[in-house]
Amino acid sequence: MAAAPEPLPRLRTRRLALRAFRRGDLEDLVRLDTDARVMRQAGHARAVSRADVVAALPRICRYPAAHPGLGCWHATRRDTGAYVGWFILKYCGKSCDVEVGYRLLPEAWGQGFATEGATALVRYGFDTLELDRIIGVTHPDNTASQRVLMKAGLADAGWGRYYGRRLRLFAARRFDFGGLDAG
Ligand SMILES: CC(C)(COP(=O)(O)OP(=O)(O)OC[C@H]1O[C@@H](n2cnc3c(N)ncnc32)[C@H](O)[C@@H]1OP(=O)(O)O)[C@@H](O)C(=O)NCCC(=O)NCCS
Picture 1: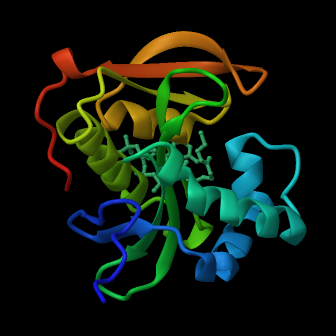
Picture 2: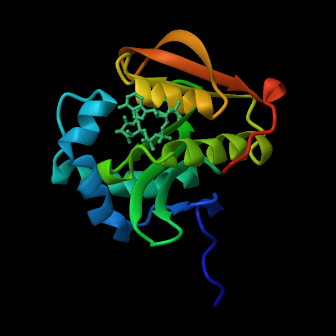
């Protein structure tokens, strides 16, 4: 019997391997989402509970079936196989805008991984999915994430209301998008 097709394409950058999240990835997701440092930087008041993560993983795994080509990618280092975090390309909250996003373990910060993965997803979104526009949103204080979005080719677009909050907004259009090196 042929293997079931993968829900999302595998993507490779110079140093990262990205693939769809699976049910068996629970411990990786728990490690990331229950880390107070990660959630603080992302602008969340508190880390989520293990029970929240258990509830979220099936939704994450089902997302590409409802939104082909979009979802959440599990990312590992190609040299060591170590899990570094996730990258998303999906609808932003209840809006019709597609956002690029990322959440990495603290030991992976400051090495350009977020820029590398985000750049690959922006290129995939424009080249493969032929999206017209990709946005990114951050908490106003998350300058690291704002820098990542700009290095991935998105421009400062001011402010927007997403997830019920006023957030910094960045955007790129396929029409304006020059070739970027995915690293
Ligand atoms: C934000 C985050 C993804 C950045 O990842 P990263 O892999 O460290 O980012 P990069 O190494 O690609 O760095 C990108 C830029 O951000 C800058 N940067 C990194 N950390 C920074 C910090 N704490 N303050 C200011 N700038 C910072 C880097 O210097 C780099 O810019 P430069 O090349 O001009 O020097 C990571 O810290 C993270 O996962 N944080 C928790 C979750 C989160 O905030 N997600 C985003 C929600 S919007």
